[in-house]
Image 1: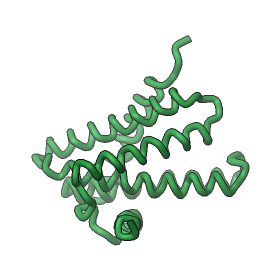
Image 2: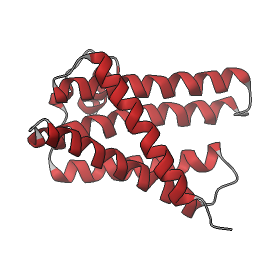
Image 3: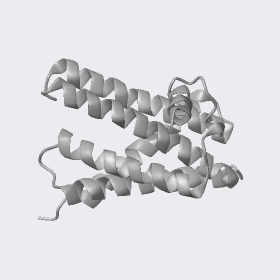
Image 4: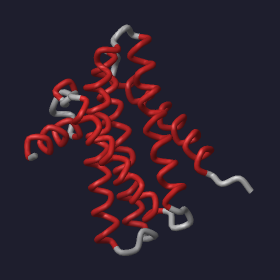
Length: 169
């Protein structure tokens, strides 16, 4: 367990190679399940106006669109064999950063405080940076292009997730 924490922390700090992320299918299922559970919990905590089904829908659609976009980019570069390790790196780092965000919201008490909102923003930007780093390595692109792709995927997945989880009135 400490090896996995060390590995994902190393990727989050851009000191370890994302290619080292475990890519066994069972491990991917566990990491994806952890990301869904933690993401749903955070959605409910950060936005009290949503119910658990809306939060779960948002997180699942977000993750599915992220995975699809990542696979598509790897397919375009003729590197689909890198998909399991790339997805493991992205989702594993997201679990770690989400855990940090969960602990921050747990100990800060009020999420509306400017300092807390600032830290939430910093962790969000850090997540984009890490995803950009992983895409940069997986797709053999420059770091800047990786970050821009991460941002584009983020915007796409948030728009799709919001549309899927918003109740029709």
